Length: 337
Image (cartoon, rainbow, N blue to C red; front, side, top):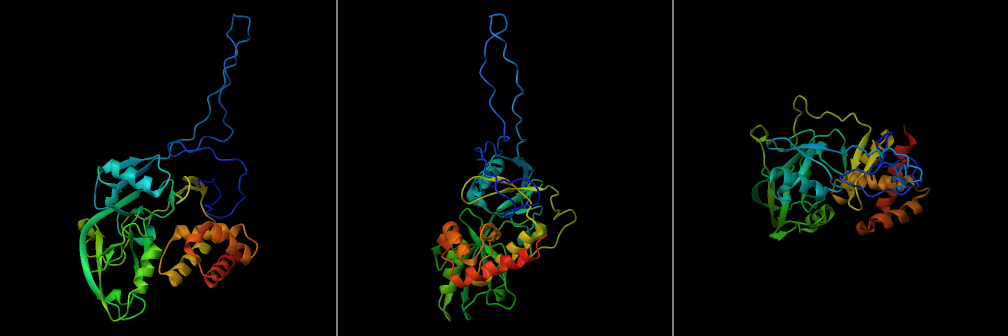
């Protein structure tokens, strides 16, 4: 939802009762703007001349700068309301297929999962699109129940590796890197699967049996070759946008301007994201923030569980997990700022 200033609130603040108008070109019409009344007559024909009214104020278009992460000219995009439309706009600028884009990072061209584009874009953020590079296939034997992978997805059909746990089974496989998209498990395509489905498939693989992963690594510039887990910052990179609003991209509905989230909301989302990794083997800041939003309107764990089921019922979260999420959010809210 595109909300207004304060602090980016996927979460706090009172909801406006006024109905939002449809977004046009990535921008909502100014609230309170009305159409000019019909002409009531012309001077000289006996009818009073209609007073000219100022034209409605239109909010400026939201235009973002973008590049391909491995190197390209800078392009401009606007008018998108979700991640799939964002990818389509980027693809149009660079004359590629949207399916070539694995994921995007904000304000860095490197494969930095801390700068991954999720459900929110700061109004001054620079978008770097990471496209398909080489395909590789690896064979792994599952010697432990957990492989040590944290999976996320791009919201447009590709699941990829966000983290590799130190000392884990997958940490020993040097060809597997953070940022690699998982295209198939044992020759079964998983394109189009959500991250939680892919994480479950990997958990359900039998122990002591080898399996194969077909991976697609992001195309890299020469200065990025050799990176395996995370990137160090380059001078001038990783700057935080100074604006008080962000563009919120939602899986359901249109994008909206929202306030930058408050400190307690950021902390709550971080704690919930940690729980998602612990319980489900996924990282999803947008999902975590949505859960914080739901909790913000609830007064009890029971009400939270019911509301969560209405909004995110497809996840079928177990009761124990929901209780921990509620406790984590309330714990962060206890020190709210």
